[in-house]
Image 1: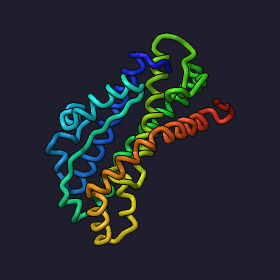
Image 2: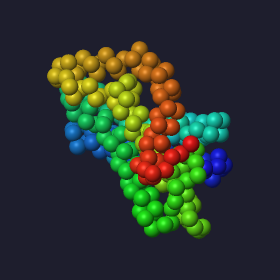
Image 3: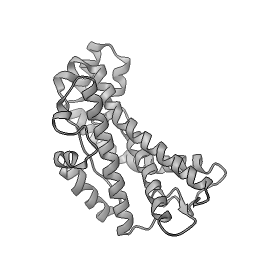
Length: 233
């Protein structure tokens, strides 16, 4: 992919759509499990506005600035939940946390299947490079190059969002994974400890170091699945 305004718009569109799906999955799962906090804020919805309204810096300013300054899309969003509900039901809270990355991995799988379909129909082919998460190139003009770029970003970005949020580190969603291995009382103590400012700030210092190697490794993994007989430099 060339780092131009068009690609930036594709990245931003996929980022917003993927992040909205992530947060809406949190909100919907939370509602189904007994917490109406996010539903009251309108976040059980694929409408971007409730999510942008809650986190305008993470949904608008941060991704746009990060692209302009570093040609990288960085941002965040959040779905509110009742901490008292989470304390009473730590295992339900852990399921709610897993819903977000689960949505991202489902999007990546669906976009990957569409790329495979395009390859089978000879409208897509292997890219010359994996730079920027490019996982497919179009064999014809029209809207096919745009679709190849959108699907490539959808796979690469959602694999990153899903995998990153499965890292068992606060404030990532994966911080809830150990809860499944603990008793209710131990899970409560664990969540209380890891939701403190020290654990969260420590996690924020580590997270930026994970993004680049995860993105590179996951993009190569996706390319290997799509093109098992090809080797990309």
